[in-house]
Image (tube, rainbow, N blue to C red; front, side, top):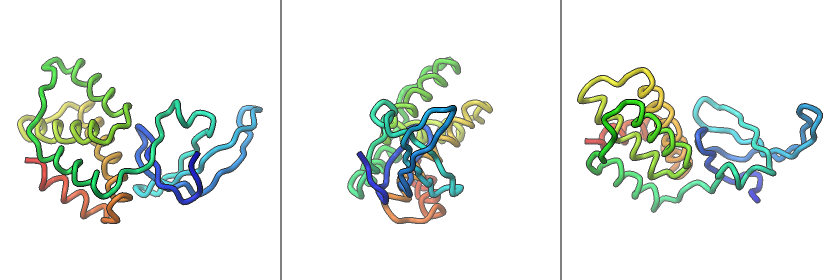
Length: 158
């Protein structure tokens, strides 16, 4: 159970801060929700409390883990399927896992692939989504600005 003020990571959406815990009635069913604000785009997300473990919500990483994420971004590209469809599914599975290191690999691999040859529209969307998730978590874990984290990612990926 998380509390108001806790920093959490929500797979596929990114990291944010719990601002409130409210009971809401949606479709005739009353449930408790975490109200989480994601720092990028100032977006609010409602997360049902009874689904927290199934969804894979976890605390935001610490400063030591940020250094490990940077190391993943700086590493060489990992082998990806040549087939676009398989690569797309593999990357989506990594993002859905909620594992920050997997997401960092997706960002690194797609940035490097984009530098080689332009990404397809689908892969560009995956890259942008993964980057937003990575940015939101590093911002909350390191207290750096969005611009600083964006610049750091671009500089670290070789």
